[in-house]
Length: 347
Image (cartoon, rainbow, N blue to C red; front, side, top):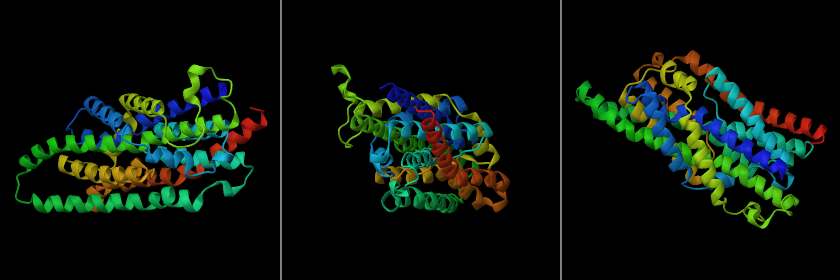
């Protein structure tokens, strides 16, 4: 029971860090275009993240039971998966790099499960989980974001070619409030569910192992004899925690995405946010844990590239790409090493 409480606290810490680490995903564009101040943008993102997090559990089910063999997962496995993700998130946040919290958690879970199974690779669900739900979307969603953002921006440019710059700025300054809100909602619907899934996995593991057998009657809600729906208290707790983390802000990453990568005007911000939000919302509906960071970043790149390729600061983009490439293997290694280290000390 003590270990579960540690897992729960660590999961909520991950969710909180995810909130402020990925705040920039929802609000970097609306801040960079000066439609909202950082304070107002963070408030909008926090509210919409909360609503999005309460919207469903399809992604949570994928994380909890779709990627690894749950019979090979212990409470220690879950703890090490979370710690691996947290370490990487804090490191990339400190560097100001918008890396993927989603892939950090997935990598940590795979590495820790592999360690628990003593190197038995069959515990990883490659064909039914990791490839279709993680690796393939990891490759395709950024491309869709880039070309989708570019296409929408070109269509808007054609539609508005006779409009005055003042008219475009005023109209899309207001429209960007809607697109930023939609981006915050879609981010919550995908990212918050990942921690819901990991907590549900911990509840299932604790029930199966007998860790909850001696709980008092009032704590019966912790028992999860089979992995069906995510408990409602888990949904609400994760939603509130992510909203609180979002309210904490993430100015380092906002600066990278909203100012350093490409300079945007309101119509471009609208195009980038709308493209990304549609992709993420569609993925959430299908239960696919995509990287909101990857999608919004490439949407911004695509929109910026329609002006001219040199408008995108490709040196910054290269640093971001390295963070993307390294996230899964580094967090998998961290999860593996942490599980082996704790096991060696008899935890």
